[in-house]
Amino acid sequence: MKTTDFSKVAEVYDNNSFRFDELAFDIHLESYIHGHPQQHYNVMDLACGTGIYLDHQMGHFDAHSMEWHGVDASEAMLGKAREKLKRGNLVQGLAEDLPYVSNSFDFIINNYAFHHFTRKSQVLDEVYRVLKVGGIFKIHNINVHDMENWWMYQYFPSAYKEDLERFWQKQRIFRELEDRGFKVRLETNYQMEKLKVTDYLQLAENRDISVLTIISDDDYYAGLSKMKNDIEHNPAKTMMNDFSELVCIAEK
Image (cartoon, rainbow, N blue to C red; front, side, top):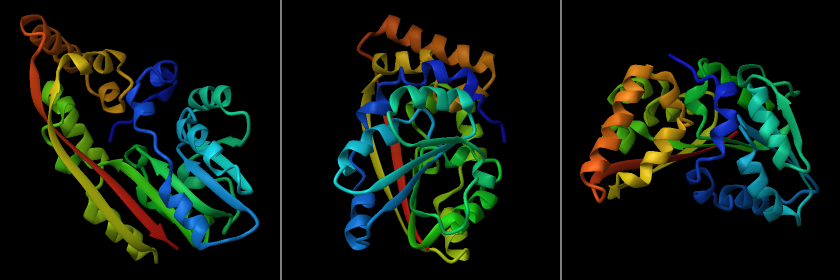
């Protein structure tokens, strides 16, 4: 599978307002804390990127003694995270070889990033190793196998082929976690709606969405040109859009 060079994306990554609009208080972390009262908690954002999740969550959990960790393979992305975060431990490292001792973490989250790992099975082995017994591993991601008509794929059809290579189906995620001894609960949320094409042109132009970085330049500029032409001929043009999210909670 192809991979994104995040050193080329880091500077524009936070320009995507949707990354901030969709931020929410992590109810699963809150649920874990309520169900496991203790003096201190170690939380890891695996593939933390520019630190968006960590920055948003830290203030919500100030009443608890929390040690926040962010791990990412890209030093450029971590540089942006360090600009945001006044505290927390940010480490450059590979998810397939986590730089932590076994049984270290209470809660590990992986936001919109599991598809980036080229050795996914090894990542799951490492997560299991560093997670404490009773700890939670949370995967939150888009569910591309149920969203063939996502706006992205309508204008950049080669992106769908690439994503089918990068994303595991939900059944495989469930099975792989269960085979390692996790107790797994997996949920998906699907919606279909009409979107205005013009509202998504800036996202396409920013080219920070990872799959747009791995399709060919010819395919990218062809799709971008089609969006612009559609808007020019009909500024109010809409399209039907599939979107599906997956949340998987795995307890060791």
